[in-house]
Image (cartoon, rainbow, N blue to C red):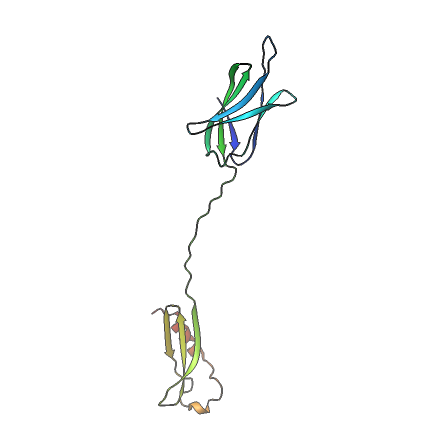
Length: 176
């Protein structure tokens, strides 16, 4: 038994050369039977100008599953039935698409803000750093740059030194 590969999601056309010999002329009809243990289908054949038999199998992706099916060419002459050809049809989809969900957890965003805190008793400005990490809020006071000068004499925002910047980075990167 010969085997032929066919596509489930596209139209397939099979052409056969059928010779009928006999002592009197007769009309013949042909069809293709496709079956397995689960399903059986019939497709009518048409004769073309060259005398060949042509069978068009429409897309069967909603009817058949992928797999092997027995195919038999049936010829009926007058009241006689013949099976001149049997073959194996291997049906498969031309394109397969699969998708699956990928779940990713968002990393919490860390925000940093700096402000000046005023204590009621001393009336001095002390800068503080606030770190927000969706689950933790931490507020840490920082020593002023010039503790000797009173707060009223500082007219502009104090500049951060390298030591202050390193201290800020250490506080931001420490995990508590």
